[in-house]
Every structure is written in structure tokens, then in C-alpha cells.
Image 1 (cartoon, rainbow, N blue to C red):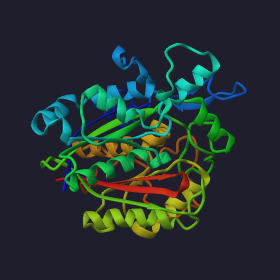
Image 2 (image 1 turned 180 degrees about the vertical axis):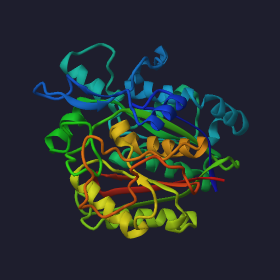
Image 3 (image 1 turned 45 degrees about the vertical axis):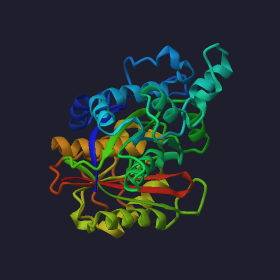
Image 4 (image 1 turned 90 degrees about the vertical axis):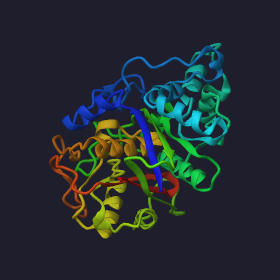
Length: 383
């Protein structure tokens, strides 16, 4: 079994685990706000931003100076003691780094295009840069690479880290991801008519698209027994459409079934499902259909994207870290927010929480589904 020895995150919910826990219980996200300056044409849009000052990238690593990497440094600071202990125990060559991102330094590239500045370097926006940066920053020489499969990127980074340990290629894996706000994805989703005009409302009758967010999370995976474990993982490819899920959710179902099988669990042994729940009409329809087929209406479920925004490549690990926080601290399960938009009664019943409730079984599944039909499911639990 692979265990989680430490985790850290920041998002629109807050910049540390204690703040995120308080805001998750209250159902508020200070960083989710209507914002100007991101959409072409001057329109406002709701975005989830990380507020406050971020750690600076050291001057000797100036070619990696992006907001994405600053978000990673902020998440890293929360688990630094555990990481240093692992390096001291196993050595710098036995710690792997696997990260997920979909933007890397694209925002820096966009700003350089509009107003060239001397500090810009092309490698900032290379998708491999986050892992290369952390490896250089931490002076680690184990396997280090970045995965970019859109919105499942960091979930797949966790799966890859687990496999590196299982294969004997590393003793510890630093896994996670980061994505920062950028005009390119904001305008890109808007051009696809997938960006909501309001704060996103997953599984609501009037849902009209996503609200993009930014953030980062990191986890330290190990074979050493810990209170939290990565019980099971599943992944699949729809091979159906570049941006739409399979109409029957076949790939999503395979990923969830694989995760249950690898964990040795039945559907009814799961205590909560953190749904992908993007608030696009098609995603919520397909996901509710799949969850209904596998779990019926008996397992509590909700999406937390109305609190974090859709953090794209970082979504998988941020939502896994939220699951870990609920398990670690015994937090009440977050309900789906229908305060501004009524629930869609036409969707198949999938256990949507309408009020907070305790976690009855210490097992949480977290879904991440991406463009191109890249599906993943992670199952975390207390040991």
C-alpha cells in the first residue's frame, strides 16, 4: 500500500490547510470573485484567485520565475519538514517528482507578448518546467517529470508517483500540481461557450459553465505506514471526442471501477465522492449518470468547484488534498450549494449533499475527467 505522509495546498479557499478547513466548513471562498481584465472585450468573469503574497523564486533560478512555480513553493513550504526527513532517510536520488499542469508559465508568455520584458524566458511556459524547477530548487536527482492531460493532469501525477514507488524506481514521490490564472484558458473556455457568466453552480438547473481558478497542492507518497493512504487508483481514455465525454460515460465508469477494484472495495464501502462537477451541462449530466449506475443515490457526493474554481491541471490534486483534509481532521462533508440556482431535478440521483453531514465511512473517492476523454479516479482513506 502507498501512504500519504504529508500534504499542503492553497486555492481560492485559502493559503494554508487551517484556513482552508475553516472556509470549507463555512462554505465560503474569499478568492472566488468577479474580476476584470481577463476576458477580451472588457467583460467581467468569476475567477478563483489565490490572495496574498507568494514566496519568491530565488534569483539563481530566475529562468523559472513564474506564478505557477511560486504557487508550488507556497504548497511546498507546508510539507518541507516531511520532505527533508525523507531526503535525509533515502537520499536525493530516491525521491521522485511528478507534477501536473495545463498552463505552466503561459501567463508570463502572454504578458511578454503584450509588453516585452527582459525577465522572460521561453522555458517558463514549457509544460515540463514545474518539475524541472522543483528538482533544481530542492537539489533532487530522482525521476522528475510533468504530466499534462488537461484537467486530470495532477490526478495522473499522483497515480504515476504511486507506480514509481511500486516499481522500485523511488522510495518517496513528491506529487501534485499547479495552475495559475491566465488569459489563454479563460478566453479559450469562453470561446467554447463553457465559461459561466456567474459563479459556477454544479448540478444546478441553470448551470452554464465553469469558473476557472488557480492553486497548487503537493503530496508526499511513501511506503512507510501513515494514518492516510492512497487506497486505489483508476484511469481510462474515452477515445471519443476532443472536448466532450462519452455520451454514456463509459470511460469515466471504467476509471471508477478500476479504482474500486485496486482498492479492494465495493461501491457501498465509499463514504463520500468528490465529484468532478464542473457545472457544464454535459459534464454534470454524464457524471451523475455514471455515479447513479455505480453507487445509486446512497453515497454522499458533491463538487467543491464552486469554492475553488476549476483549477484545470491542478484540480485533481487539490480535490484529493481536500479529501485528505476531511479524512485527517474529521471535517463535515461539504454540501452542494444551490443557494443561487435550484438543483437540476432532471439529472439522475447521485447522492448530492444538501446539508453538511459527518463522514460515516473513512473512504473518499475523487473524480477528475478531462478534455480528450482523460479520466481518473483516486480513492483515499484512513488506515
